Image 1 (cartoon, helix red, strand yellow):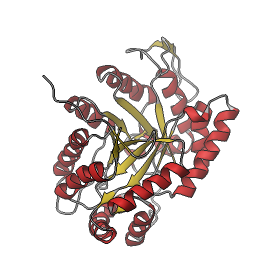
Image 2 (cartoon, rainbow, N blue to C red):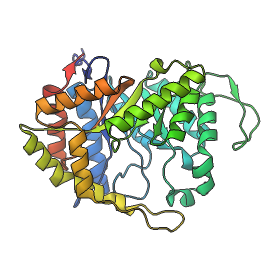
Image 3 (cartoon, rainbow, N blue to C red):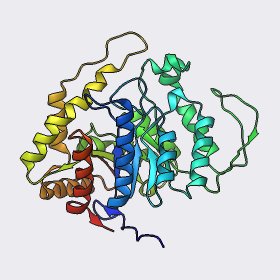
Image 4 (spheres, rainbow, N blue to C red):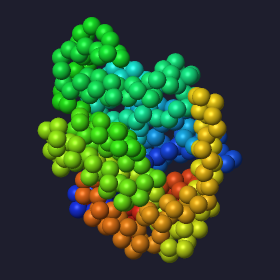
Length: 346
């Protein structure tokens, strides 16, 4: 006999609520503790009734200590039974698209369709040097990588390479039983237009406010329509900082205290060209995030989510970054309370 599973929590009409996990190392914690905590948050998401979990991927920095979102997703899929598990996002500039596509097809098959693949260009970091792909792959290779990745996941029996990834036709094994969807992390107009040309939904980041995201979605709709895709069929995803407490002030104090320690890991990025990384006032950034995301009392969080649903009608997956207060127990409590006090069951 199996326990009855809770209905998937929603953040408004037709919008599913997921967790977005960084697996960031908090000051004083180890890498192993950060990964173990992220796994706990994933299983807690299923118990609390969230629709899914999306895992970030980073290399060589403590802002996120998960170097393979696919490997983490495989582990979490094996530990859960209902939720979807996605990547937000696999860095395509450091991986061969066929290798990533094979892993995605494998997880899609083994999980019964519970795996969601999100990919991104990444940054001009030392990762490109370590993995031998180089700066040109970052600057110019993303379109070819997306094109080959999506053809491999289309359900075709055989696939040949393209100009950047040349190879003879080979069998697709395991062959997807259906076209496996791919989300594209997008922060710029060219990347939005690339995704739209392929009819691929967007992953919109936490740093952008509602007007910025609405502008990107409008551009997507125009370009997708010109290329024969129905813009309304794209189930976009949008990341948001999320923390709930009894009052707005209590929630804001918790995030102002806990989030800067996590954001400090961003300073560890090393550019491949040796140039200094752009600095950021993290206290100001935290204040900006609090102002535009559901951080506050249950009433404020519901109001912010309602505003997002109204402004971003193409978004069907809301990715909630719940680690803002720092520490295992505050995060686990936030996961449970946000589901119970802010989100509505399906």
